[in-house]
Amino acid sequence: MSLGKIIHKQDNELSKRIDKQKVPEHVAIIMDGNGRWAIKKGLPRSYGHKKGVKVLKEILKASKKLGCKVLTVYAFSTENWTRPTKEVDFLINLFTEVLRNEIDEIHKESTKIKFIGDLSPFPETLKKIISSSESQTKNNNKFLLNVCVNYGGRQEIVKVAKELALKSSSGEIKACEVNEELFNSELLTGGIKDPELLIRTSGEKRISNFLLWQLAYSEIYISDVLWPDFNEVEFLKAIIDYQSRNRRFGGIESLPNESFKDSQYSS
Ligand code: IPE
Ligand code: IPE
Ligand code: MG
Image (cartoon, rainbow, N blue to C red; front, side):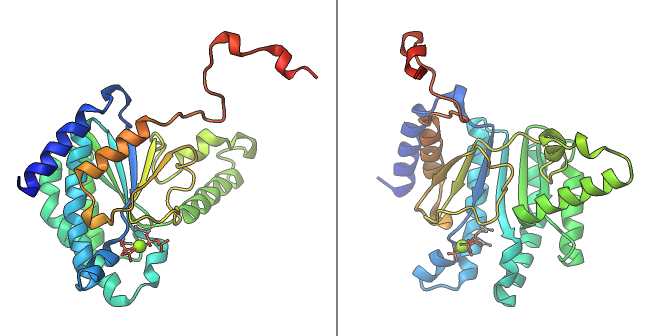
């Protein structure tokens, strides 16, 4: 059997195990491991980034097929500027080229694309294509793809704090009106539903300054697969794992009435 057929078979088998009623609406992904993937193959790191784009396209398709509504991916962090200039420049050019080539397809699929992060340090060419892509797709409502670039969770929180402080000092709001709801609405994610699931590839067990506020109660799934090797089958495994979780949000698992006895708590 060819590799393609094996993957297709695995994919069908996994799809059958998915509870369609419990598909996460919003999935966030830290797409990590591009460099290591390339190095392992004796290739320059840039090959890993290129292959990573193909994987993103596959996962975007898979998440739509499954019935997810929002995908938020980490493409470039505020800390990634510390990489060699050549790699940073390569990534900036790659984002520009991919966006230019893919935007019509994204639009045709009725997907809205949003870029989240501080775009100001990027070159004009990238800023322009980001702006035109966002306006071209702004009325699409089937699916939302958030791409985080020059994004840092701490920077986002500081930005909101500053904005609220300014609004308070200008009298637009009162300090006592600041609450979670208001804070949330000022975030770069614009108050959309928090991700139910965070996937990080490449086996790293950290958040790396991603969506610090929004991930407060997300389920975390770490895949050992490097991002360029990630695929629909691995994505479905993450969803199945997510569906087996017991999300308690600080409460307790619902138990039959008899299990709750006041006497347990009396001293
Ligand atoms: C993720 O892969 C892509 C970006 C951070 C832009 P890496 O480039 O971090 O790959 P590794 O972690 O070095 O293998
Ligand atoms: C996180 O990956 C950022 C992106 C995937 C864009 P990194 O490779 O930059 O994170 P660390 O350095 O391993 O924490
Ligand atoms: Mg990395």
